[in-house]
Image (tube, rainbow, N blue to C red; front, side, top):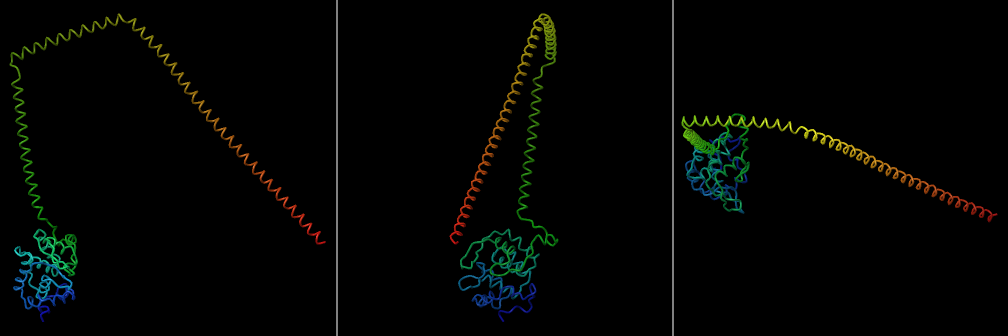
Amino acid sequence: MANTTDPLARSVHGTNPQNLIEMITRSKIYDMNYWKEKCFGVSAEALVDLAMELRAFGGIYGGNNKATDFLCLTLKMLQIQPDKEIIVEFIKNEDYKYVRLLGAFYLRLTGKPLDVYQYLEPLLNDYRKVRHKTPAGKFELEHVDQFIGELLNKDYYCDIALPRLPHRQVLEGAGQLEPRRSALEDHVEQELTAEGEVAAEAAEELLVQAAAKEAAEKDAIVRALPSSEGAGVSIAAATVAMDAEEALVAAGAEDGEVAVGVGGASGDRSVDRRERSDDRWGDRSDRRERDRRDETERRGGDKRRRSRSRSRGEDTRRDGRRRERSRSRGRERSRSRGRERSRSRDRNRSYRNRD
């Protein structure tokens, strides 16, 4: 009777809750002294005390394939099937991390996909260290978030086949589950907001500094401006300077006209020289063009002659090969005729000898 399921327990995933653990694993759990001594007649209230005494989690270990205390309590919870509120309190317990692991593992076995994602995903922010008892019987150091990640992503953990869990994207596409919001998003948004405020303050300071600098430059320009009397004197001096510059320009223009009149003859001579030089350069360019044309024609004639000589040589070689082949055929015919004559002589001799 100690190994039977509570008669008031409801079926889970269409079967007896204890059947969620394979029969071989269940028989190993039933043979454990921890099961016989501590788990006999345990209620939901007493189960909390046993969960608080856990010091590691795991499945089957050792050469004799023993079951861990964590696995024994899991099977006991499947037998007595505690209320959902108790399981939620197990998961929300922050003082005892192995109680939290036990509640998460039981919910992964028996809970609906929505409840699994709703209650287990917040535990991904728990980074406390826990001990994992390996199949070799040794302890390894892991973290709570790593344990929860294995439950959400794997189909076999702690030597127990876990029920199939739909992907989160499927439930989000069906509108049954909201997109997951990481705990780091709030922290990142706060940092971005703080950085934006600091950048805005720095921009305001730069604008204030630029306005102050511009105002200082304007004040310096105003101070550097002369008084009204000095301004009048400077304007008069500028007018005198402009008149002097115009007079110099006019004098330079008259000198240019005289120079043009005097140097007209020399200009004509220079034009004649340029025309003669242009004629000479034109003759030279024509001569160079003719030389290039002659050189191109000469090279083309050489190429044609070489090609003709090559073709003649090939014709000569081809004729020689033909003559050699005809000679060889004539020799072969003469040899065959001689062999035929010798055969006919031999036949005639043989006939004479018979007669």
